[in-house]
Length: 91
Image (tube, rainbow, N blue to C red; front, side, top):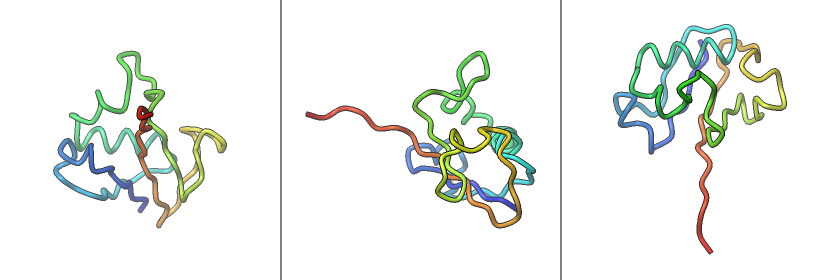
């Protein structure tokens, strides 16, 4: 079963879990399963019209899903999905 790594800033919305295993065949299903388990994550990951927020980066086994098949990227048992919020600012 694939697992999703939850960044520290979002763990409070995911039952304080660092990783969550999800039954899924692709990234879109995995994220939908995560949201169904932890609905409070929805507003942090998706816009009101259901699109992944621009500052949320999703990696599958260290590969940016935007350069794969995006949310249609196929998953297999043991795959790791990492949610990485962009960080901006500083001088």
